[in-house]
Image 1 (spheres, one colour):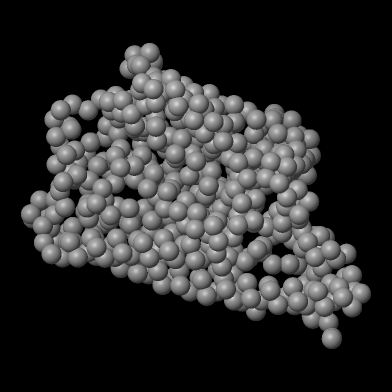
Image 2 (tube, helix red, strand yellow; image 1 turned 90 degrees about the horizontal axis):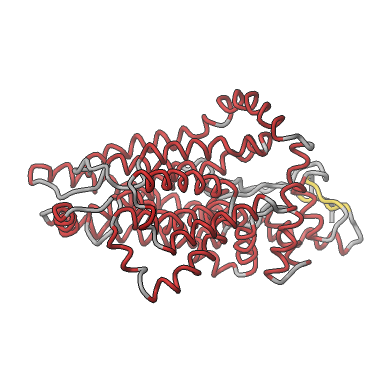
Length: 481
């Protein structure tokens, strides 16, 4: 949608408005400081996360295939088509500190792109934008059903947080062009020759990140195509946007055709045809209402609570920003159901993790429905201060939880390190059936650790046995020295 001069003047007024009063200014700086502290806390927590479950399987693969491209090629043929996610996972296991820093920035990137896409502009230095960014941060931190698995855990972050970031980054150029035709000036001329292959390659990388990203982009791309055709703007679409769509399609096809997909899902699907999987979908949907959808309730409750200060911030009811909320809600629903068509049994187990894609799309839809945030009126000063104070208090709570999570993750890591000494001692004594005691420190919603089980055939036990070069490893009373 092309903005009129009146709309551009209104936007300029919005960007320059910050509200009167020293309290607003003070809370603005407090919010900025707390957001920076939260970002630092996310980096520290990412660094202290203990290795768990798939991390050890990835470490074994890294030992056998140390080169990046060799590791991705092996995983593409033997495990999954998520080549981009496997590349991020390789980096996470090889460069712990660098990944911890980048992982915190990736979470911040998801928050920033959520704001940019939903509000249809980039955030600026003013209290209302900072408060809205804080609300998005708090929503994701407190309400993602599996934040430890999808954001903090090395293997989980590579498979869920980073594909979410790539998905939103892929949407942004299209959102920018639809919002204002003048945005094409940034890509026109000689720069077009550089951005076209760049967006083509980025599209392939994004398409190879996760199958639900492919579903979301396919749905949004179809809606965009219909919108452009109806607006008779098909001929105005810049070349780099066509290249990005082509790249995402190619990446998605390569992901879905990966030989590793069949290897990974054989146990779950037992060779079932597509029609058989569709037939089983109805049965599994009945289980969804009992086990999957209730796991979304923390996110829904958090959205309801944060909608109170958000409603105090909202002034304009303009709904011209793309993507329109009903389109995003529809695509989010499609993403919710997609895993059940492919691997319904696995989807019930990993359903909590895939809700990160749904939660982000729903959040964008909710903010898009609210409209942009406009300048406050003098009589609305008290509600605005109340909104800023609410986000400030919740950010303090988030920081307190971050501090406790770092301590818990550090204790678990120390206990895992002590286990390694115990395993080494048993192997040195000639014992191939290793037994280790359970951990004293339990995981938390922001600290992921899937511990060993008493059964040596449990997949975590098998991964650790391979990592330690032991015949078997299981949980039990520590052997006498």
